Image (tube, rainbow, N blue to C red; front, top):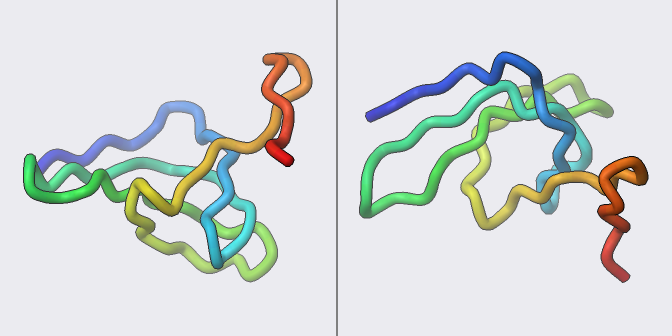
Length: 68
């Protein structure tokens, strides 16, 4: 198992939970999805979300528009 605390949190959206800041991730190995540690903005809860449920947020300065 490997854990990484992000030096700069990443703004993300967890499908089904909402927008938040990714604080780090956990890698359990080849048979598992990467797990993101995310503090949800609205509820102030901290969740560990599997990689397929995590999306980076839109960012105008990076030319990353929100998908339609």
